Length: 350
Image (tube, rainbow, N blue to C red; front, side, top):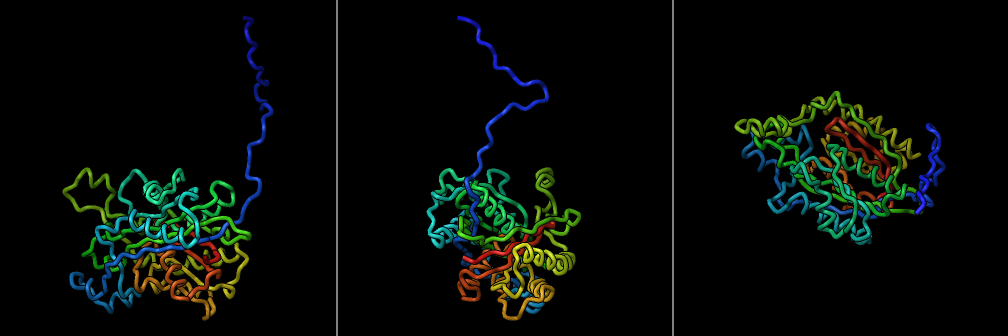
């Protein structure tokens, strides 16, 4: 048999002619199609908290606006809460789990380094074969997830994306720490993002300032604890005054840029849904944005506490359920927290 001639390669430095990489035929706008939430059954009032914490109801209300919060019970695992919220969001959207192309979980309280939480949730829901991963962007995580989901639908990577914000912050706190124990709550919220006839999620405005990474952090890293388990376990800690100043005065310009990117003005909003960090931060942002008095503002923190990545979808669900924000209305979302990280976008409510 005659020897085969090897294929001729072009001279060094020249790229051979190749077919173009395939791309989606047509980019699709994206919007939020469905919304769901899960809140633990156990309610912890300020009065109950103060039976073991050196504080008072008046002190907590004055500094945070919190009157009560939900704390997870043993069966309220991160996965269980996420599945409940996701099932409600899928039902609200009228989408089967099998049609979901990607599951994104925003959380800081999944205590297993690996595997990620998202694949487990996708499996339990029946989203067979869906891409699934976690993101850690603190209290801004949900808005990061919405931005990723929008771009996936727009770029053709997935037709439907499930974005979940879920937290069990009570696993991370020192319940005797007067400075932080009254702040966190637990819960999960989820949205389904999918194709739309016109854009329903505006461009994201996001960023981070790592020079302030230590403002919200752990007392020790897990390796230090593994090396010396006789010491105290790692807990969440925060420099409250620094966070307050940063969030109150640096985040309003970010929110304003998100409005401009979406071509929306403040008086065209049907709702403002910021991360539920602190009632005083929310009030300061409302003033800085010069929101009209008739624009409803999410204040879920009073009953839910600060639920980090879950706070925006939980607040969105409460506003819609209570009739404060209309279906199909225009809302400004902004998340900010550990990192310090932030993200904001304008969305059409499901």
